[in-house]
Image (cartoon, rainbow, N blue to C red):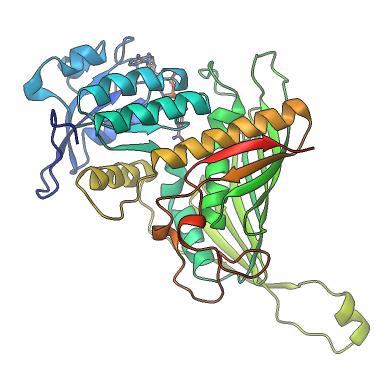
Length: 389
Ligand SMILES: NC(=O)c1ccc[n+]([C@@H]2O[C@H](COP(=O)([O-])OP(=O)(O)OC[C@H]3O[C@@H](n4cnc5c(N)ncnc54)[C@H](O)[C@@H]3O)[C@@H](O)[C@H]2O)c1
């Protein structure tokens, strides 16, 4: 561990925290850093100043990371990196080098190579790092995953995600695959309990930009679960939905409203033999769960603070998992460009143990052959890809 800013694993005093980038995302982080009990606010960095009026004390807005770090007495212990994606690496390098633990907004970087460079720098500096895949902190998705891993659906067949809406004009450096679909490419493995093995993608460019503005992905996880992901910046209404279909019914999470609904398969049986043979499932009870709703960004911040304090099982998303999402985004773009299916080869995980199911009602890690895939092979921390015809 870099000793410039030691982490304090024993005391629960607030960690001194800063945010780098005060744009659409950074302003929300700034709000929480000034109010959440787990941190004390050390300042914000943006060369454009505080355009959204997110910081109460103007003296705590700095034009550069260098200026933020200038006073050793006031130096932050942790920093949230919320600059445009292509500038993540430069900001992380400077912060990590000064011994500051970093929570980096998703996507981790604009390419797998840059993501690996970022991870190497964090490891070399000996600081903690995590990536802000905030959807994992959404109460509806957390509860959905808890129920899936608990066996409520029995065997899981398919995961479908939809993330549709109008174009946010501020995004210039990446397309919809890296900016938005990285959420979904992270979620399918997290919810399905296994890594992606193959995917095939189609993109569209309808807004005269360099990058794509619509993507559809069809893929398969290592345990046989299939998935589809639809993401665009072209729809005139915002949709954020994740459906998990299994042998006992379907769970649907709406992450805009944080609602989770269970559509059970009906138990109605038919005495007519011919109809029984042909019949699929029938509609059963529909249940919308009452959920305790906490702000996902606050849950993410608390998870990162727990990681820095040395918590054994923090809710933070590892940098390797962030790299895996960037790798998958890269595979999606290559698949769309080549009009080919891409095979994704999962690598060994060091963080899979905490994701193991409690063993109730079937094994969500069982592969198509019925054999459980446990431990290090259950969920990939990173992937590498190769094209298949
Ligand atoms: N987790 C999510 O759901 C989510 C949502 C939106 C954006 N993001 C991510 O957050 C990051 C920022 O996105 P955004 O929408 O806030 O962008 P934005 O353009 O609104 O804001 C970026 C800000 O960073 C500032 N900036 C640029 N270079 C800087 C530097 N070197 N040092 C300090 N500040 C700098 C800019 O002046 C700007 O104010 C991106 O990586 C994006 O993918 C994540």
